[in-house]
Image 1 (spheres, rainbow, N blue to C red):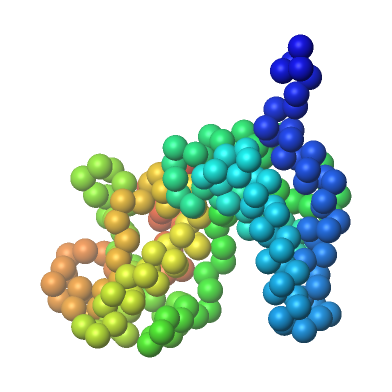
Image 2 (image 1 turned 30 degrees about the vertical axis):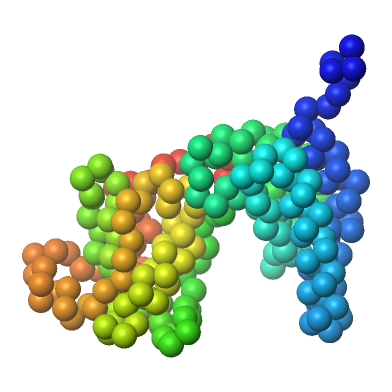
Amino acid sequence: MLQFLRRSPGKEFWGWFEEHKDWLREGPELARVRNAERASQALSERTGELLRSLQRFDKRLTPLYWIAADGVAELIVTAEGQTEAFDRVFDLISQAPQLEDWRFLALKPRQPLPETLAGESVRLDCEALHYALQADGNGRAALLFLTEQASDDNFIELQHLAMKLAEAILGEEDMALNVGQVAMVSHGRFAVASPSTRIRPIECLIQEFDERFRCFSSMN
């Protein structure tokens, strides 16, 4: 009989969340009024408790949360690109309560193009980037970012930045399901080596990607 009275794992998580929602919201808010060390400790404590509660639902999931520009707290549940866990994310978010001061998102959403992207030894002006977009052998996107700042010394660093940039502007779902390859290479060298490949400024990327590759989630 007790097994029929026990709440589902999703309801267990959201029950815990509603009980702690004000305490959770205090974490990012403290960063605005307290010193950095105390704010970091408060946020770390809350994020840790939120992570433990979420992973009782599914150990593959991770929470990200902050206060958005409109003053609403946002909770993103991410599977960090693990496509086999996406259905669990969607299932959990479909059970989310309606809370006036919270917004819940399944998977990392698309973000606006950042002005700059910095690594250890290079800072990219993102608006100056170009790209080439083709289909790989599996019909997924092969995306090349092209920069004038590429060199043999920063090649590996640029590949990390390319992955970070691609996920930010394309979102977790499309990045995991519809992107097969991402790299960042020298604009000049690529233009010489592949003169027939179309190169476009980065502001054209989203429209072209959506027309050719995008998948549409029912959740975000």
